[in-house]
Length: 532
Image (cartoon, rainbow, N blue to C red; front, side):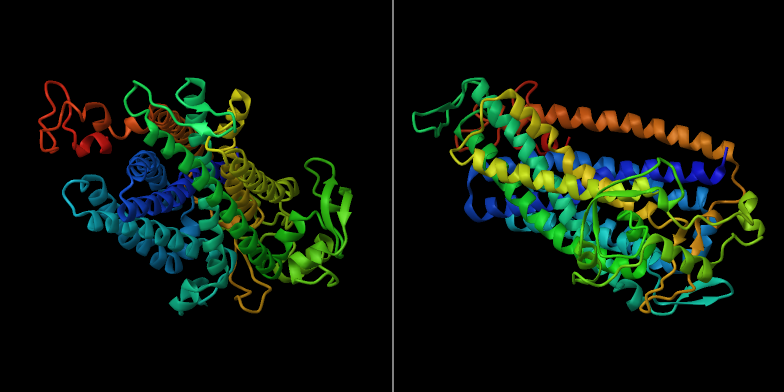
């Protein structure tokens, strides 16, 4: 057993799982805030229903994200103490601001929003949600600032072998972070858009399947009413508006991720050229973009890779913005990396059994190559599905096909896959560094740390394996809990977040104010019914 590899698996599993919640929290929070703003401005009941339904799912995901995210920062001290010592002076500021400022604001105002439906004025209540959502965006910003410094160290001086922050402004305005933040936000909105689209499609299909809605001779929907509480014409408006809003959000966010992703790629070609060369399976210098390359699985020899389909000029455009500039390939870069950073790990106890071993500067090319393409492919698939959804729902409902409905629901997973693939590519492509060196002049070239030096020396492989098994098991249980909760409230429809739709007629006084609810019934305006 290898302590370093186990520690990397542990951090990878828990982080990727946690990041499943992050984009949905950020994206769905922004969408719910916009929807509540529409209700505040128009007073239309469908917007109130949309706010409460999607808001309930947002809360479930937010709470699960908090539970799974707490472990991440503890892992720095548990399994990565040497890394924590190395980056501590830099990471202290952004991580403290994330926890003490952004998350504090986010959770406080989210609490006011949850419990303030009847207690706060509508405008103040809406402002609480916007503040909470903006807090979540700032929380993401501070985390990305820390991560971006690992990709592109700036604003520090090396003192006694450790980077000490000398320019906080440089750290917080790192060009890597300024591009990564909007890319992440657009990725989060892509998740939210597909989430709305898939779930709303399911409910529109169910209304057709149950005979609530019918289709006229012109193909346009005729919204119906059902004896089931909440399944009225306003319910139809909830789902048709949700599916179309989701489709628009998904398409806009894909365009945003494409533009910011192009900017991010150009920075990576400058700051981490080996990562991008591996992502393109570009073994030799050239201009061609690999549409499909094949090679021997697990091979460390780049020359084993053969480009099956290659488009000339595209790689140059991705890297430099033109179609003729030659881009350095893996073999050329490998010689440069060896000359700059050595061929073998230093003979230092901090490296343990790896001391003196040859450094593998080429990351796992199967991961970088396919991770890059899965990121783009899943994102493009979600955008195409959104375009199809806009066309398919132009007459006010969805096709009666159960198969298409299932495709729409499973399509929710596409932007999740794009987000996960993008982050796996970003982090694994940086190997063998945990803090990458920067040949780009805007960075500080000699600030770097090998991943082999970052793991906690006092933690055994057995202890790490135990924590890996325990955390993976706990996260698996949490996954089951979240999925069951989400499925329960999704199937319940708007009524699952607004029980007053069931009890309102019997639980209102003559003047329309909430009554006492009657025996065993909640009050019509009971906020706890929404919160819990």
